Length: 79
Image (cartoon, rainbow, N blue to C red; front, side, top):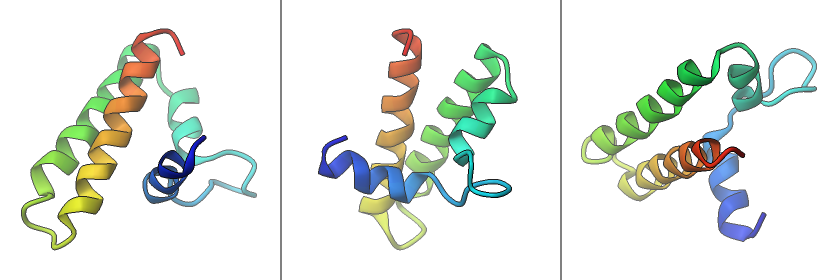
């Protein structure tokens, strides 16, 4: 991952579950079917697009939205 991706990843992927063996995003993917996970990614992108005007950190929220959208695109491409 290049520098921007790493920073976005740190912003968007919170704490690990359990003993730190799996990241939140991977946990979510492992516990949903494909379409549910696509909806999860889309919903989070929409959430950050909606809230960037109101939460006081617009650029951070837009980067989070972009991270989820990029992940959605990657998943749709078969990644």
